[in-house]
Image (cartoon, rainbow, N blue to C red; front, side):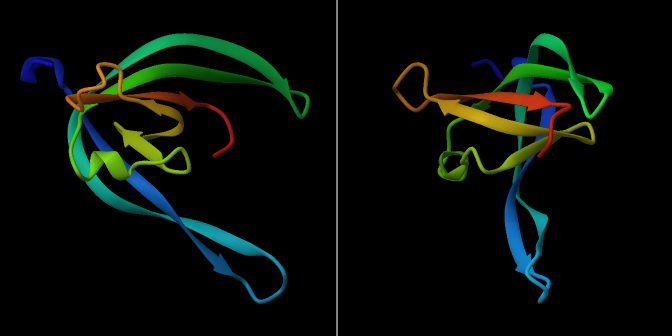
Length: 110
């Protein structure tokens, strides 16, 4: 993947869970690392949720493979231009650890 194709600054965040002492809890997101990558939006869809029309957009994020990038799980989120995306799946398409592709989605519950 050529460096010129990596135009988006992408922050990867992992969840941290805390107990509120009353049977519930909260999740906070801690940035683990930030890299250059590319986001290619694939499709959008609308869904009816709680009586309101919601818009969701899926896409593919590509990043160079690295020790840090290989720690990403589908439990994490990534942030691009201030927008949070859920990570749905992670693949190594060339099976040579050159880059990773992540199927991401925004506009849905995190």
